[in-house]
Amino acid sequence: MNLKTDSELKIMQEGGRISAMALARVLELVRAGVSTLELNKMAEDTILQNGGTPSFKIVDGYDFATCINVNAGLVHGLPGRYKLELGDVVSVDLGTYYKGFHTDLSYTVEVETDKQREFLETGKRALENGIAACVLGNRVGDISHSIQRGVEKAGFSVSRDLIGHGIGRNLHESPQVPGYGRKNRGVPLQVGMTLAVEVIYQKGSPEIDLLDDGWTIVTADGSLAALFESTVAITANEPLVLTSL
Image (cartoon, rainbow, N blue to C red; front, side, top):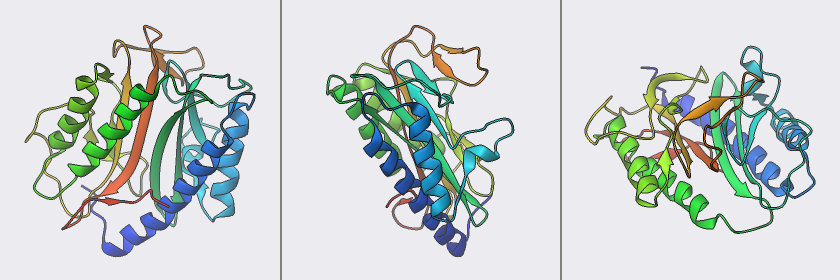
């Protein structure tokens, strides 16, 4: 387990602010007629201008600063020429590599309509519940259970194949943090652990398909999907969200 020192957590907070700033600027740009590639450019420019490197561009074979998923897209969607349409559900996932450490976060919005409010509010609340469970004395299963309970209580389903993870010097570290599980199970939370807590969920079945581009993962039944994520540190007191402005 790669536990972080106080000085390393401060670096991750600095990088997390860059990630949060980039995401905020991308979300301000979301509207009908804007391409997903334009959103990606905004993210990359913001990260670079603030002294960071897009984490995702460090991944072998991946050429973008973001993963952008629309409607049935769950994760790893490639930015491109597609122009957003009224009512699209758009998830933006990005990360920043800063002074040797990664941070990662995601958010989902609806393009200029409010028809999916209940669906999206469910994911926001589930992430809040997951973060609240990131306290010393709990286990990973407590985080997972908090997420699953909130999503399923609203009538939706959490992904069984796509999960959160540890993060730090590497974009993906131990432990795995599923969006489903039982309380008091899994790895004990320790001071200095840093976790990318992810709520990956859909309106329909959790079964998934991989598109021909080799990256984009979508719901197999075509149901709407959403993603909310923050990078969180375990401290001796309350959870520390590293990806906050």
